[in-house]
Picture 1 (cartoon, rainbow, N blue to C red):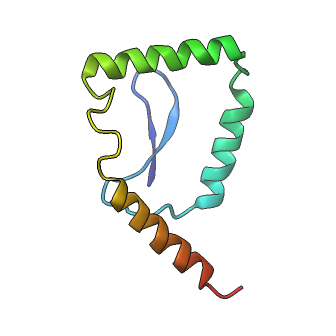
Picture 2 (picture 1 turned 90 degrees about the vertical axis):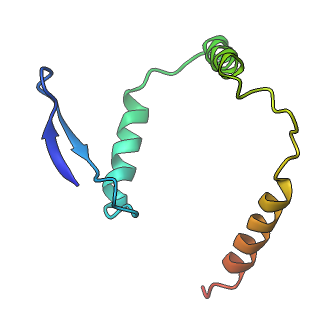
Length: 93
């Protein structure tokens, strides 16, 4: 990761290299996310619904939604959930 200045904007941003597979500074990321949430204005239910509807319409326009078979691949999801739950339960406390 490296700090880089955004051209023309004078902002400095943290850039993560693509080949990095893990978040190395999880606390820094957590603090960043919490700060971002604090700075974002709270949306009303109506605004949230409008945003959801706009994203739905965009997904439909892109042909991603509605799914032709909503249950397609659900077996893989179940298997992944089973493996994750088993491994989580087998961890020592």
